Length: 112
Image 1 (cartoon, rainbow, N blue to C red):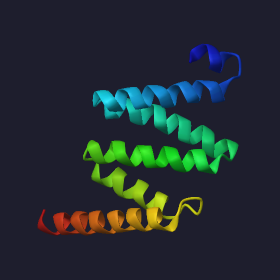
Image 2 (tube, rainbow, N blue to C red):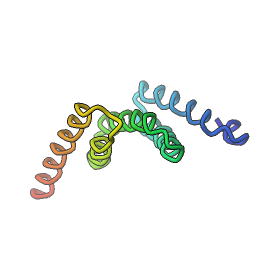
Image 3 (cartoon, rainbow, N blue to C red):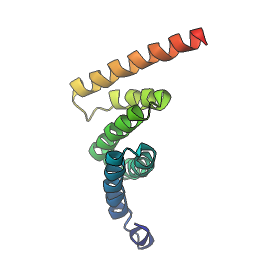
């Protein structure tokens, strides 16, 4: 990956990064997967690749959910729910997830 970055082939580096993210995700090392996916998302956003960005956000959401990172999962659900490139049923699903987790966070904060 470093070689691709060095010669200005950042897209190729990010593609390898996404493959590594999938590998780490399958190993259960979601923290490492998140790092690669976050880098890819930044590049896709900067390049205007909205469909790849949306797919990457869906992958990030699954990692955050498996990590039980409620705050980050809720935030990524909100971002996914607002993506106009995704089908409305996908967006609604993530909106409902966000809403459910917000209720959980809010009730947890009341009793803390």
